[in-house]
Image (cartoon, rainbow over all chains, first blue to last red; front, side, top):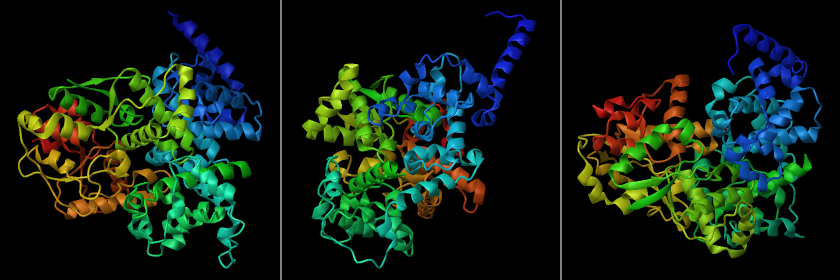
Length: 292
Length: 287
């Protein structure tokens, strides 16, 4: 398109006027003018979604906002002042977090929208709002950690603390340290649920030798590990074996696990300790998501 | 002719391009042909905390794409390696799981039947190319350079699945360092975690793990740390620099990628090795 200078000015003014309708909404106020113009420029061609590194995740987690082209549509709706329901906001928040920040969407966008910058901005705005986003407790946060200096527009730690608190709030038994535990009836549903993934079989053959806990670099790091981490790996295996859900999923240990696989490698009984911890993290997220 | 589909993952093309360029430069000289599959997606690693099936689907799609092209896969990142190996193991072992995964993949007319192998860069160099063949290509062997080889957890463990080296007493990385003329030092924490998996979710714990390793490497007399994993390198380079800019207490222990080290000893110029792209300078190593 070959525009004269005056045409360009006219075009620019038109776009500005067009974008003003965004500037009244909460989302619109928090995006830059260029980002608002970019939202308007999206033709929903879905080139981004066809190149997205995590588009396949949509097949496992049915949230349309995982797909970048649909994220733009939701953000555009928010910026236009269309009220989204809390459920829709949760969906957008999760969708915008389930992203490996690989920039492929931005590289392939035929209109040249800096989608990655848009995700970063919207992600931070949403997770600072107070609805706990549990995906922050995963290596998807690596990029946010790298960008800490720039991302500090709100309280960096808040979304992380909130996610941990949301999970622990569902585990009452963890708070009652003097409670006598009722081991029957065993929560068979929870116990057998752990087996389904086929990565975490055999936790019930643990004989409590504590090798997993002894070799764990995270346990070793703390002077009083139980105070910081809650239940330690061998205790978590034991809790899972007994079907005590609150105890199995309520410890900080799960989220502080480096997944270095030392415990699993050295278990004399062949319990896939790290994989069981992975499995418990999945259960904790799924269970908490249903409750909050 | 050795031929592999190169699996880069999500971080290398945007955050660690020097790992790709240096690996390509080195492998070209050693006669390893690399094929690119543009449709590859995330290896699934960051999704494992959230949902196992989603992790498996993501991983399996990559395996299916490579199998369609009848190519074995070579990864540069050890977390990608661990994830693809895990998925490969489960899909080869568990038929009903494979059926379930393939039912989804069939929408794209692909499926995984377990006919390919997944290798890490270091295994390809050590087992396929071979130490002797590498030795013949060394033009400028290092002298007196002391390197702390950092293994990386997800290549070593769980050994039953990854089958990379002896998990308790591995030697592949030391062999590969020594062939460049550099000396791989013995250090206590060589098999420990770099801390990267918790960056962003528990920064304090993550960086303390990193510092412990760096201090141990420095105290053991290393001039440089050497990695062969995307996350470990970012942690020891970018994140170490972030820590230093906050609390510049100890002098840095710079980290470089194995193909950068090997490339220099093979006489490959600094440009394709991307030496300038490391955050903590490693320029002196070439001089």
